[in-house]
Structure formats: C-alpha cells, structure tokens
Image (cartoon, rainbow, N blue to C red; front, top):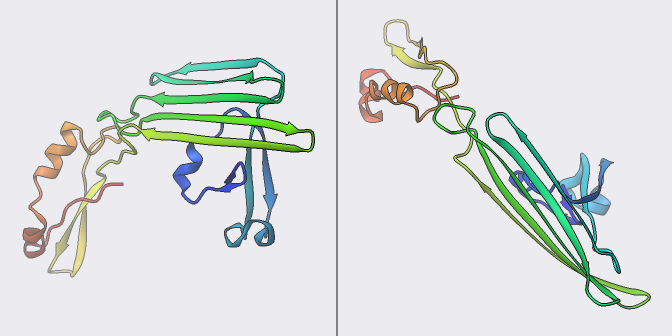
Length: 198
C-alpha cells in the first residue's frame, strides 16, 4: 500500500489516509519491478487531491451514527500568489466502545498539508506532510473459557466462562472471573491455567 507514492510499511498506517482523495488505484501483481519486493500480490496506490493553482475552494462532510459514531472530513484550497497554492485537509473519526468496558472503540485524527508552486511553466514543486493519531482504548477481547489439565486422562478440560460476549476483559464480570485463577507459577503446579482471551 502506497500513500502518494510512499510505501506504508505498517498495517495500522493504512487506517487513516482515506480522505480528500483524487483516486485510489488497485494494481494487480506481481509489481516487484515498479514497487519493490513487497508488491508480489499487487499494489494499492492512494492518491490525495493536490493543490489547485488560482482556485479558492473547500468542502466539509460529516456523519453520525449509533455508538456515538461520528466522521468529519474536509479540505480547503487557497492560492498563494499566481504560481503557488496551499491545500489543508483533515479527518476525524470516532465511536464509543462496542464492549461494556469501553474497548473496541475508535478515536482517529489525521491531517495533511500540501504546498504546490510552479516557478516556471515546465517545473512544479509540491511539498506534502501527513499526520495521523490512532487513539482510543483499542481492540477489545472476551474470556470464552478456561483450560484445566486432567492428570488422569492426560488431557485438558475446557470450562466455559458463561460471560456474555459484550463484556470486555476490563468489565466487572470479567475481572471477577479472572480473580478465581491462581497466578501462573501456582497454575503450573496445580494443573490449572489462566483462561485465554479471544
């Protein structure tokens, strides 16, 4: 995945740049010759909208949904003299947690500023800077069951937690559930272990 011809090395980097776009290109692979070794399966090119010379323009888009979900993005294009232009765009996304402990939420803020100048007819210089902050409590998980080693049979016994799936790890029922298990060193000697979150 490439943003404005810059390779995005982390999967989380692709969470925020989809705003104020000119186009998105999906190129089937292999594309190693043009994009390097990470493009065996193809490439996705995210092309942002560029500053426009001699034009004053802008837009704002907003949405709202359940779980207090909101989305606001917009951009403004301002000419700077006859041969230059500045474009500033921003994106804000968020929603409250899907789980009762507040996890599985979103709080994303992103911004982009670009400056374009054309000192002579056949030369364009564009400088661009991007910023993104992926905040919030993060992804949530639930306790599904616990495992206990049975020395008689030589296998594990699975015991369901019986905690509804909407309760995250930090909710009161989940915290009460985890308290009944001994710490890890004792678990090794007693044949019991902590439940694994999903």
